[in-house]
Image 1 (cartoon, each protein chain N blue to C red):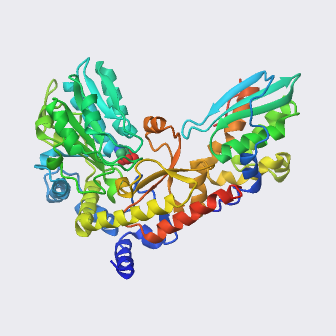
Image 2: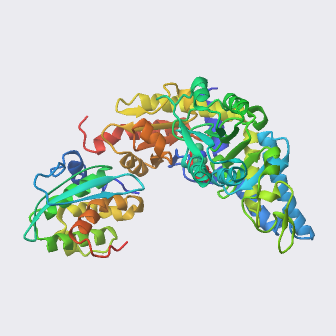
Length: 146
Length: 413
Ligand SMILES: Cc1ncc(COP(=O)(O)O)c(C=O)c1O
């Protein structure tokens, strides 16, 4: 099993030096996500105005995959509309299930670096923690697949 | 022993385990979760199904008698292994968890009353904690926790202080699956008895690694799983003193556990069948018996000697890494081959995943002992656990791979 491919520089960089891991001043939305099986947790905070994710941050504890994935996610969605953010989170969740096209992968930018986690079922929950939390926060009424 | 002698012994032992012999690239260091199986266990299971298969204890024909004999011979073999005084005291279950649940349901339903106390230690596996909590809740009894010190030690004074007039039952692990420490079961059982409490011992991690003599320990109940001692999954054992089994109601109801049934009434079968409802796992018992034979053949002298040597090396290798912190005792031999640790700056799940890439297999998480992890304030840890078939080479490989992890995670040290 090739593990080096997903403990790549993008992931380790976001884990060691996360830009978005801090409490957020002026947040108007907040949700805590937890993986009960391993204890990984993040609290996601957003400032959403006029349908746009103006700012976002998270705090939490957990493995490099869960924490870096949340950081990468925030880089990607800050400044986007809520609809775009939801679209990206759905794309990410689909990527982890191994079902995206190359163009879609492009859209995910750095988050595409987590693609290979789809081969490690035990770690999928870590990678999607932040994204599930985002999805639920922005669209609480939607049915979560899975 | 010379280096050559050790290598020859490694080879002789490892050639008995097909998965190990067939995969020299794997360093399997998660033996506290489950062990590997030797060829003799695999062939015993197959032989049962090829040659002796019928429903044991039921049929009136020769083949069923052979199946019954195979099953009952396995029971006798386990009895001898534990030095129990009678096969009536050996109940086959699915695993240690079921054995403990059996006592928690059956004994507690008959003997635990509102206001009574059950005492467990903080280092119990969930399987030796949750059944007692449920039992206590059912009757309005209280579950109390006995803490250890940061090296995992429970002193006699601490134990005496935790017992009260109301303590009816004490449940304690013999060797902790997290800390590797051994509790002095013989002493604690004697103290509990003097106070009028029964003593339940979780032997899941001790029976596979040290000689366990239930009469010498004088425990009332002892539970363990076959799969942690090279036997198959799905077979476990409850040793229980006959005086209790006679008075306890059945745990599960069904076929084989009755003598006589009318529409309104039933007479329970003799021991131990009263506690083995339904068709039994005969092939599992036969496989476990083959595992017992292997233990006898290799001998605990050799098993303990090997695990001690490997344990000292593992302790040394882990301690040599300044970023690694072993939880528990500062003395290698006190760990019984179980080393739970943290590595600065790297989450245990990442450690296990990266080691997986090096074919070094260890456990990460809370090890089904969350209250202990909370008590030690280490929510998640990595764990290496050894068996007698491990080698020095595997441990050196572990040390080397652990040494590279911080670099792989982007730390520049
Ligand atoms: C100390 C201890 N008790 C009980 C158990 C439960 O064993 P099983 O899952 O085989 O029932 C384990 C296994 O993880 C253990 O380590």
